[in-house]
Length: 355
Image (cartoon, rainbow, N blue to C red; front, side, top):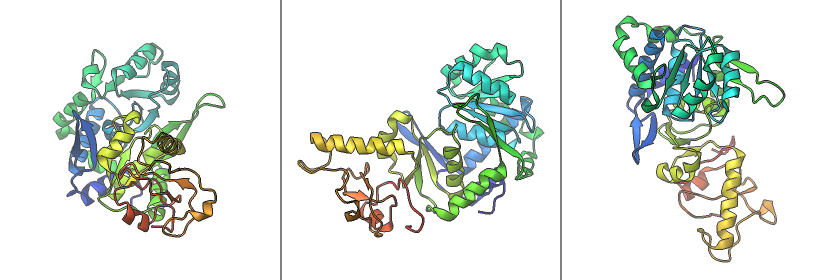
C-alpha cells in the first residue's frame, strides 16, 4: 500500500479493482445486491457534491448517527472527499448523549439512518443552533427539515458541472489533515473527542496489510459498529485489499448472514466467540447440534494435545458455521491446512507467521 491518505486509498482502489464484481454487498428484499467499485465512486462523488451544495466546507464536522450499513461507508467517503471531518455517534446512545457530542464537536450536519435516529435529533435540535442540516438514509423518514440521502445524492448529480474538480480536490488532502473525530465512551467523565488524521488511519491500514494478508477477491461479513475505529479501519483495509464487504442486516442476523455469504474472513470481538462456544456446548449437551450424541465439545484436559495444522497449540474450541461440523479444535490462528480441510469456513482470526 502506497496511499498516504484515505481519499488516495479510495480512488486508487476504485481504479485497481474496476473489474471486480462487487466492492460492497447488502441484502434487500431477500437478495444480496452488489455495488461495484465504479458505482461506489459515482455515488460518493455525487454525495460529496451534494454536501457542498448544502454549504459543507473543508474543516466542517458532519456527524453520522447510524448502524453499520452501506450508506454509512458512502457518507464517510463523501465527507472525506469534501475534506469534512465526520463524527461517528453510536446509534444506541440516548438523545441527551448524542446532543453532547453534536454540540461539543460543532457538527453542522448529522446523517441519520432511520426515523428513530432522526427523532433523537429532533428532540434536542433546539439546543443545537449550529446544526444546520439533518439527512436520513431511509427515504421514508424524510420530512420538513430532514432531507433523504437520495435527495442529497440527486442534488449532487445535478450540480456535478459546478464541481468538476471534486476528485482532484479530494486527492489534495494531506496526511496531517483531520479525517474523523471519534468520541470516547465517557466512562471517566464526559466523552472526549479523539482527533485522527488521514495519516493516523493509513498507517494502521498499512501495518495490517504487512501482518495479515487476505486474498484479492475474498469476501468478509461486516457487522461490528462503524462508530468504533476497529471496524472503520478494517473496512478501509478490506477496500484497499480488494475484499468484498458484505453488510450484515443486523447484529441479530449475523449467524444467518454467515451462512448466506460464506465469507473468507470475519472480524469480531471476543464476545462473538463466547457466544459461538456457548452455543456449541449447548448443542452438544442437548444433542440438537451437529455434534454426535455422547461427544463432548469443550476445553481439552490438556491444551497441548490439540494443535492446528501448523503445530501451534489450540486454546479454543472451534466450530464452523459454514460446514456445520465441529472439527475438534483450532488454535488462535487458522493455517492453510485448516483452510484446506474446511475451505468454506471463515477465518475468524489469523496469527502472523501462520498464513
